[in-house]
Length: 322
Image (cartoon, rainbow, N blue to C red; front, side, top):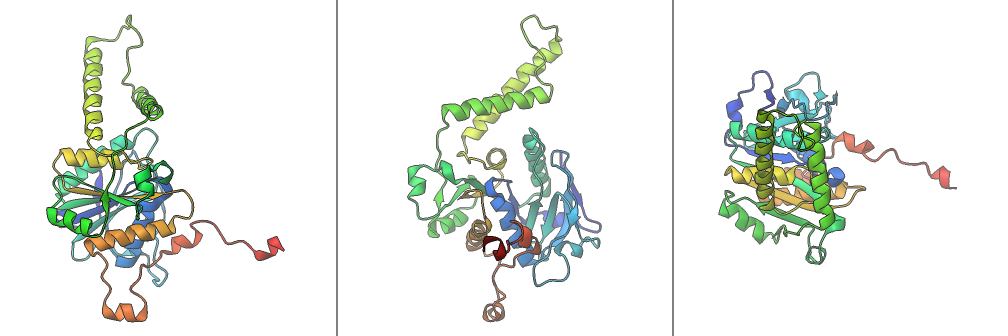
């Protein structure tokens, strides 16, 4: 179901043909922090929100860069408030960004991913760029020896010119690491919990009194689960990457041009990771090209939003350690 709600007076046809950039809530929140940098630097207009029941609702003041006195979102929302999932667009309509500020409801992330797919299809974006981070502690030897912690996954529909440009930057495709037995058991356990929560497992034993229709539905669901697993197997694993693998696999299956950019990270101060991810994205797409005047006066760098001031708590007083 398409859960996008457009802002008043916004023509949804402006989404058609633009490039969508969105984060997958991943380890260290690196994709969301990188999206923060894009929003505060490019000064995009908020054009709507995604009101999805599968995302924990949240409401707060809109963020703004340090050198701005007006929140970013006020261009389309006079109240200056932020919602859980918002959609922004550049004034030329070339770039559309989604920012997600809260996690999905437990065991409901796959439903959220499916709704995003519907939104992507209805909007007819030119291409999709998915930002994700992966658990740096689960890298294999070749990834540890690599000169960069960034990897990418292109779908077959991604233009060759784009992939050639990425290769010239020295980036490598994410390696496909086989799952371990423990990870396989954990995945099965999670799927069983999701199905039980949704009420899909109606029969408990051979003597179950469930109706024929319910038995048929169970068989169909088992078939759908097998198909979804086959789709996932076509995409390299992204440890602690949120919905990135599922979203990429479905887009790939539907012929949508999607590029997933993955950065290996660890929990902690992830601001440098976000800057690196934003720099890589900018090197690929040239989203932020400062003018000569901005370069000379030092305002051409990424602008940090004010919310980053309290990202990791207040600074401590030196007197405490004297």
